[in-house]
Length: 234
Ligand code: AR6
Image 1 (spheres, rainbow, N blue to C red):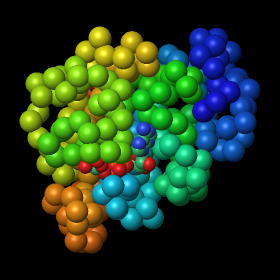
Image 2 (image 1 turned 120 degrees about the horizontal axis):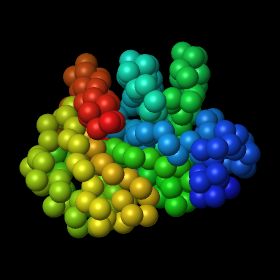
Image 3 (image 1 turned 90 degrees about the horizontal axis):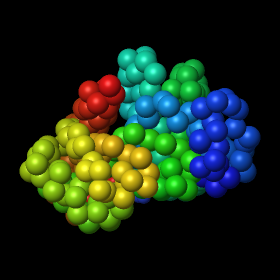
């Protein structure tokens, strides 16, 4: 999110208004990103890229789960992140969240790299979610590869101490070691790995388009993610 600077983050706690940047005007964010004192979870859309989960169905579930958790958050907020302004899942979710009148201070969408939200976008997030694989291993492309690469080797070690593998629908909260660049540069203190349902026949445990199972697992995945975030909020 160009145009929202570190400076605006630092000054922002005092001044509630942030001038709308060009990106903001395009709709990447509709809340004050500068509220640096607010506990924030940034999360990618689980399962909708490499795992090929249907975007319409996933966006319904994201909005449903955000609505369920947003009131439990007290002074915290949730941010759905994707890489591009053309993101289909972001526009679907934005439209559906607006229809449901979800408080845009507590939930909004943001265009940016989840590993660079503060340094490039001025958005401070205490926790970020990872769309993981069942082995909790680095690599494999997508947001998983980006987060492990940006966090450095200490994330893999810290993850192994918490869990060896994940079942679909589950999440594991990993405190980020303070030597990790994600911690020092971005101010991220926790990574929450989440394993979503997989519809891609080339990946393990493909559900072969069984959306009854798939939707139920995706709901569980967001419940585990948001419950994990609630557990670290204070
Ligand atoms: N910043 C923000 N969002 C991103 C980034 C990033 N750096 N990279 C990707 N996204 P995916 P899945 C968005 O494929 O479908 C991996 O190989 C992306 O545009 O990462 O749950 C794992 O190892 C999409 O909206 O996750 C698993 O095997 C969202 O993140 C498998 O992919 C999720 O895309 C998981 O597949």
